[in-house]
Image 1 (cartoon, rainbow, N blue to C red):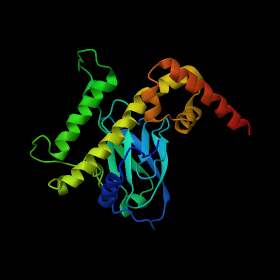
Image 2 (image 1 turned 180 degrees about the vertical axis):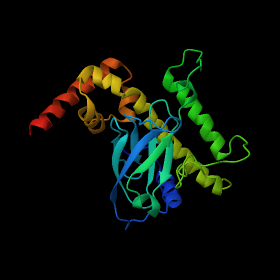
Image 3 (image 1 turned 45 degrees about the horizontal axis):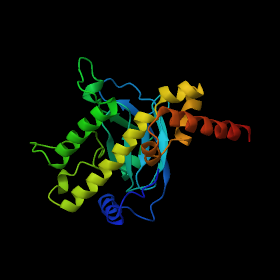
Length: 244
């Protein structure tokens, strides 16, 4: 995916929030996605550099690698979890392994009953939006806390400048990006891809990362039949690449 759905003004706002430097050195960041409650690794989650559009899919052990430079915003999504973001700082760049702890959504937790005819993505999306609106002050809350240490969550946690509407607009744009990634995670999931490719382990992760479809394509192709055709076409490219 790229950022063509963002306006120039919005990109400028996000750039100002992250103090992006065009001369910043890019380096690979090694990280691991973890469940914040259990500490278990999250496979097939997605890490994305918002300003470059590059993405990385987490392996079975939750690990991923993504290139970034100081000032970049990274977002993290996984099916059944709240999204999170961070701004890359010197402290982040110095870490050997970046630990990202995502919170489970209520519908994922035991003893939670979901009513109505909504699918799991719609239910999760409603909950993520409620959480986001509370964070930006659309709903009155006594305090706003970061989701993690080292500045995690600062991409959408704007308590330091919540009175400035331009930053709220940038935060909303950022939330929309992460929500589109969450929709891709819902449709482009490891169970579905394995069903039609029979790929496992690192091969499955590599395939899912390399051929991850865009939000725009998924919205235009809502049926599983469309997805099967896309997977088969991508699979031919994948095995052709392996033979070269």
